[in-house]
Length: 60
Image (cartoon, rainbow, N blue to C red; front, side, top):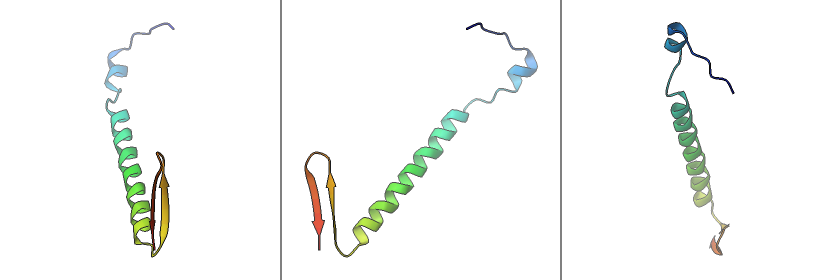
């Protein structure tokens, strides 16, 4: 792949930090979704959950 030198105008138009911002927003969104699922799971009157490693939870 050949590298191309950018001129001053092109270098000024580059915005740094977009990937970090997008990653932070997606992480917060994932945490929010997990929080809602856990809240609904534990607010239900009865149910069960099985996790990897042999962990199982059941409430009635």
